[in-house]
Length: 360
Image: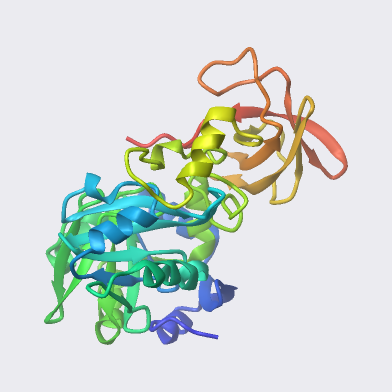
């Protein structure tokens, strides 16, 4: 099983490990709640080297990416990043992806680790001879530095102050590498694609300057509080962006894989829809718990306890898509009631909008 270039440092720090996307990665160090609190209140550093990193460069790169992904890469200039998706012919989500645009025809495409072969394969099959597709997950580590104090910390250590969805070249230890003001926590900060030989030195410097080591358990809780979907749970190849309440990711004014099927669904309406909810009781929703709303049924796809709200929160799908009445702004007690089954008993929950916690 592949391990991170920082595996020995994680073990030194006392990490517990889990198989994540085929990689052995830290799931927690001290505790998930302590790491969550550090990111929400100060700054944490995550090793997310399991994520994909595919360099797409050369004449025709922009047309290649634009013709595959549902967002429009020409909407952003060099030096910026974009959230997008690769769909299949039925408009199901093959993967949700971050793209860093380094230059006019030079990109880093960042799929989820479990889907890197599918995304890289789609790029390779469609690429003209002028475009080079090169993976560099084996040569770099990916560090995510997140939290309200992250910009100050990164500026002290690297001289780089991240700006939201801006891409830059960062210098540290005598080498230059790309970084961007992106992340998966809803907090300020950025992600740095560091050559393996310099990754441990940089992470140690961040920790010595006050960052808390944080792992995938805390990252999953942080992303859920923001309502960010996780591929394989909240997104999959049987779910479309419209069903996942992600229509904003689709730019209709260009051609992309799955556009015809998505257009048909847009005209006819969705068969299922995502719901976000907050528990009224002290129970914690978990993946697989049944949901219902009148004649619509489904299941929780992500659920956990939010330390910020002091309540359980969750995402799920119900089908057919219900028409809720008597609520405003997608929040409150709808009619029909949205209910969850826990330990054989049904209880009503509060319909919510995302993010569950509001950030300035």
